[in-house]
Amino acid sequence: MLSGRTWAPSFSGPLALAPVCLPSASEGRAPDVGDAAYRSHCPQSPLNAPACALGRVSEALRGHHGSSVCSGPRGSQGVAGSHLTDTYVTANHGKLKQDIKALRASSLAAFRACWEHLQDGLSAVEAAVQGAQLCHQALLAWQSKVGQLERSLQEADARYQLEKQKRRVLHNRLVELKGNIRVHCRIRPLLPFDKEFGDPTSQDSSVPAGVVHAIDDETVLVKCAQPAHPLINKTYNFERVYGPEESQQVVFGDVCPLLTSLIDGYNVCIMAYGQTGCGKSYTMLGPHSKEERIPPWGPHSDLGIMPRAAAELFRLIAENPSRRLQVDLSIVEVYNNNIFDLLAKARGMAASGCRREALTTKDARREVPLLTREPVHSAEDFVALAAGSLRLRAELATLVHARSSRSHLIITATLTRGPAAGGSPADQQAERPPLEGRPASGSRGGASCGRAPAGSPGAQQPKEQVHAKLQLVDLAGSECVSGVTGSALRETSFINRSLAALADVLGALSERRGHIPYRNSQLTHFLQDVLGGDAKLLVMLCVSPCRKHVAETLRCLGFGARARQVQRGQASGGSPAPRKPR
Ligand code: ADP
Ligand code: MG
Image 1 (cartoon, protein in one colour):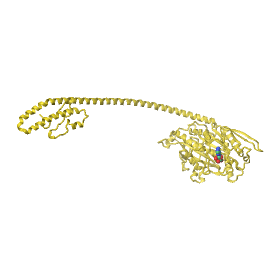
Image 2: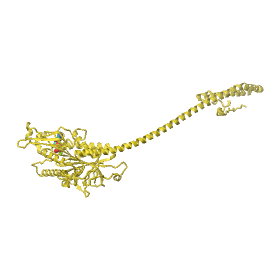
Image 3: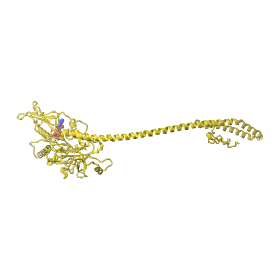
Image 4: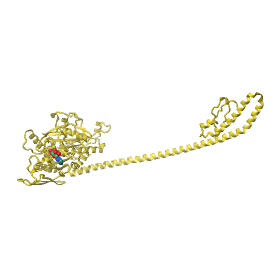
């Protein structure tokens, strides 16, 4: 029986739908599943079709109910009305049946649609699972590939280390074949000031002013015929001879391989030797003005060996940062056989406070206590620090040179290994390999030395391991200046004595004497590490081409010829034995 609150059809099985509560007429027109409003609410839904059918059933019922309500007030017509109602129900029964059938069919269709949707979803999930499995397999394949690559990288690294070791040995052999002491000779060009200072022959255009010639890459000829003098016609052979036209770049090109030896752990020294005005400072530092002892840093062609070596050193360090090499600079001048710490002097310390002494310790190490060492992190830092100190170098105006250096300048770059990331200096000490075949004498690469940090030249730090040292030496003029007196004479005699001591050391080394007289002068004592053993020494003889300087030129070339005879490495006694490269 249908009453105010109508029934909701209930289906079981695939046609089961949520019960629908149909409102009575008294409840007004709440949205009905069969309504247009409802249909517009869910027009695309696969449930729309059965909803429409249900709506139609609901409408039919509502129509029947409505008519029964309408008949109510008529009272007298009760029986007739009841009959009418039965007729109406009978009449609509078929229609209702049809609607229910339609509802069933459309619900079935909706179910099928849902089923198909589910099937599609399932297929999509299956495809996704398969895709994930493929991805997982690919990941495993990549992981194994990465493992293979890691193994081959390790193998390549091991091969690289081996090749590097071989390269070092070969490079060192090459350097040794060229000679651990190499002597190069540079003839400077004739310059305007060569005409000055009363050289009679330089005014006479029939007599060539230049008497020193580079015959080829390795031969110098000194040819000079002077009235009332025996003819001079001598040739000298050196590892390399540079004519007046050869550039700073060419000169450095031959020096450069020594820096590879330095990085490999060998001590290296490059020294310029010659009389005043022959181009030592030009070769070592570059052209300098009155104010600037070193040309300003920059990419110009006239830079000397020092700034170029600094640039190459930092380039090589940057090439292999795993070595963790740090560079400290110390700059000294040896003046009147005293070592002066120019970095301390640059900080305003009185000259007496800057005096240092080279000592040999009980275990035959060379030390310079209290020597200031300043860390530098770039070639620019290196050059700026050197330029600042060089202004303080002792000078004197001589006949040939208004600013003649009266001291030997020694710039020392000490390479040490810095701490590993996260490691303390103590760890570093423990981490370092034992010093292999290192010489006991002198603070050669790998030997220990006391270090005074920047700004506190007095503080002694714990002993540290030095990787290697580079020493750049601009020697004082080698000439015997006649007619000088007083302090100038004293300076000259000290210069000549120290240069004679240098020649003695090289002579003792060449004769493989048991005793090498390093301690005869502060210069040779300070340079002990780079004069003996397997350190690489390059002597750059600088000569003037002028006739008036010929006597000094011959002396200088003679010094170079003697130095060339030194065969180091096998020498006994004071000369340390060669060691393996690191
Ligand atoms: P030293 O240091 O031996 O006393 P310098 O290096 O000061 O001599 O050189 C003296 C002068 O000669 C400087 O003015 C320098 O610029 C110049 N000079 C030296 N060698 C050369 C060269 N190869 N080319 C051009 N100028 C040079
Ligand atoms: Mg000079």
